[in-house]
Image 1: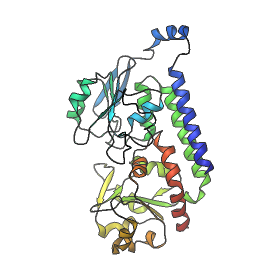
Image 2: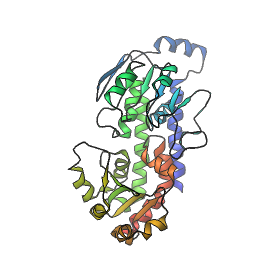
Image 3: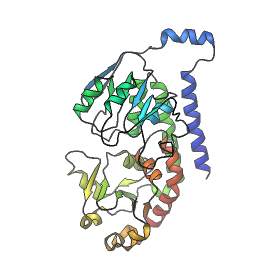
Image 4: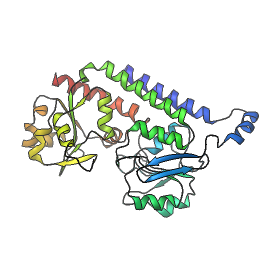
Length: 335
């Protein structure tokens, strides 16, 4: 697919240019750069708990959450610690789009499945802890801040846009200009994908996870936002449900009896742990209008689901290559 090749090359070029900005090419340049290593610092970043001030350019970076490490890698830096991936991991314990950048001799994988491993984080002696998306509470933030300046999420947990995650981390690392270029590069990719798929424009969309419990993702969730950037609009049912979302949660539980209220022109359905055949055999699921007309796009691959969920400057080009054909087929069936 011509788009996927150009998309990948564009992002590689952006990441490479960011990395080059961070590196000197000669002794004179290295000597000149040394006094300016902390130029632009200190920087202060607001978050939902208050403010975090970083006094000098961080060298030892720890990331928490789904995708802060993606931005760090894209900016030409290497974290000393980042979460081990447990959903759709590669054999190395990373995401599919980070595996080529990961070096186990330089980065420690942290088990954050049940809680933040404070002692292991502290043992890495970080200069900064980056978590602009991770939805921890104030007590966790306070404890992390005792270890190192902690960059927490600025609004609702798990709902920081991929753009804001990128610019926040860029500012924290003294690389705002490079971060802005990365954001612009991804916008070019999504704009190009939208232009090549006019069938997306104006189609209503719901993103749901089906299983023992059924969930719908709300407009504040980055996976919904990236679909909006491709031209889809949120279904009336999603918009109506959002009005009752007092806690501004990124996903809400929905009973099977109410799934019809969330039907749309196109429905993206995560069915990890359920085969398409089993889904089709369920009378409620099979009765939905989008399923009957073939505009439900069912996803079973954990890595692809993860890529669509953990939206970042590295995951977007990787996952768009995987999902655009299925989205296009669903949108065409809805026409």
